[in-house]
Each structure stands twice: as C-alpha cells, then as structure tokens.
Amino acid sequence: MEFLSDVSVIQWIFLGLGAVLVFPLLWENVKDKIPSWDDVKPKPKPKPTPDPVVDVTNPPNLTQIVRQWERLMESCEERKLWDACKKLDEVFPLLIAAREDEVEIDDE
Image (cartoon, rainbow, N blue to C red; front, side, top):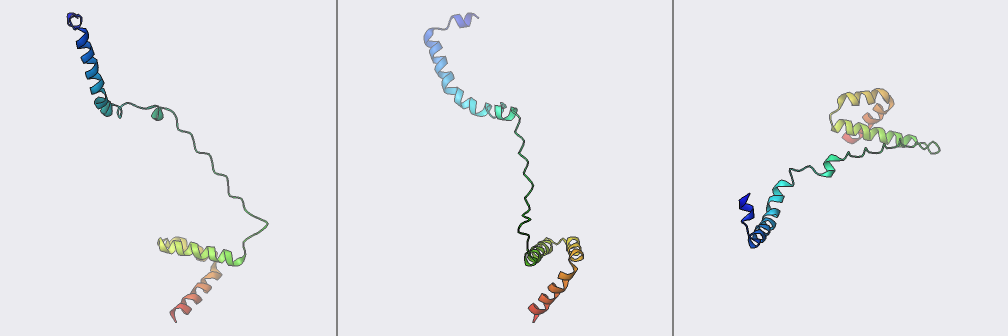
C-alpha cells in the first residue's frame, strides 16, 4: 500500500485520464457479455386474437364458395398435397365434373 501513498496528485490525474481514454474501448467488448434489463424482465404474452366474426346477414353465394374451393384446390396442387386434393374431391364431388369440363375446353 506504500505504492499508493507515494503517487503524486499529477500522477493520479494522469491515471484518471488514462482510465477515461481506455474505458470506452474496454466497454465495447464487455457490454455484450453483461445481461441487460431487457433480457431479465419477462416478455409480455401476446394478446389472443379474437375469432373471426361470421357475417350471417350476408352469406356467401354459390359462386364465391366454388371460387374458394378452386383456390384451395390449386394451392394444394401447387404444394403437391395429393391427400388433401383427394379429400376435397370427396367433399365436393359435383365440382370434379366441372373441373374436368374446364380441362376438356382448355385442351381444345
């Protein structure tokens, strides 16, 4: 401890200035390793999304239903979900004939 008592005021000032100059360089490396308050505090749970409201006063008409079925069928075919395509054909068997008619018209 004698060493600290032998240091003059000027030397203490230079040591302080050196620490001020070196601290920002060391801080860049150290601050990533220290956990921040954002890491410690619990993250809020997302609010549950409400169920979509079905408009019973304006139900979809037949053409809208068919178009939605066609979009779903096209999406399943693009993603090669053949089991889903078969199930859609089972659920809507009358639309299979309509699709086959379209294919024949397109081929001509």
